[in-house]
Amino acid sequence: MKPTYEELIQLNPYLKNKNKKDVEELIDTILECGYKWNEEHQGFWHPKIQKGIKTSGLDMFTAKSLKETFESTWNNTKWQKETSIRKICNKFFLLSIPLFLFGVISFLFLDWKISLTLIVLSIGIVMLSEVIKNQSLKREAKRKGRYVDTKKIEWCRTCKYLKKIKDYEEDLWQLDKISDTEKIPCKIYQETKDVWTAYFHKPTEKRTLYPKNCPKWSKK
Image (cartoon, rainbow, N blue to C red; front, side, top):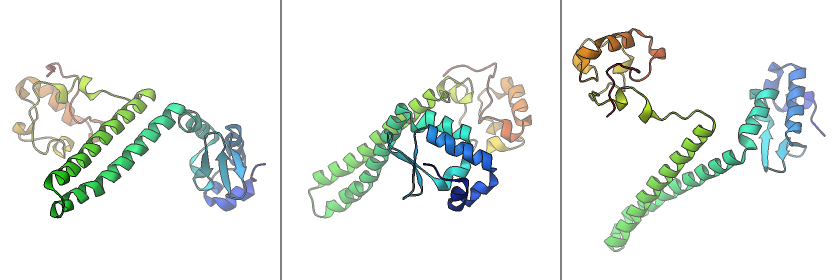
């Protein structure tokens, strides 16, 4: 059993922006992926992975993009595992907030050692959950081929000649030029002048935060 084009249009008017053939192909793809139409809840449900697809979001997909998303994420055990890890980390993070507040307030009626332990524990939970979550995001990015190790990029951040300049990363790097060369974040500016001139000649949208492939780059 599957919903008709007319039924889906009633549930999600945005699907009118697609032609009938595209919507029907989308429905067929959803069913091919193992989803079943749930008449009671007016949505698709996958009995194996125990996940549903709401009709309210169908207009954002084509048959091709939905299948790609299903194979790379929703039906991917690695993605499911990493997503579960990050959800648990978020829960522990939320748990640490009341624990920290209780630790602070408990100084009024508990032994200070117990209160301090609660505070330290809450901070430890936050730090550990963030480390685990970031590691999970890193694994996910590697799996999708999107991970970039910024420590291995040959740019100012990894160069021993980097000169820390206040406000450079906030807004100075987006300027058309920097009139005061003392605000250029390079200890050997006279030797890298051409690199920085070329950098500021680029449109902002084509720049990285710092220039790359500088001939004077030297690892920290």
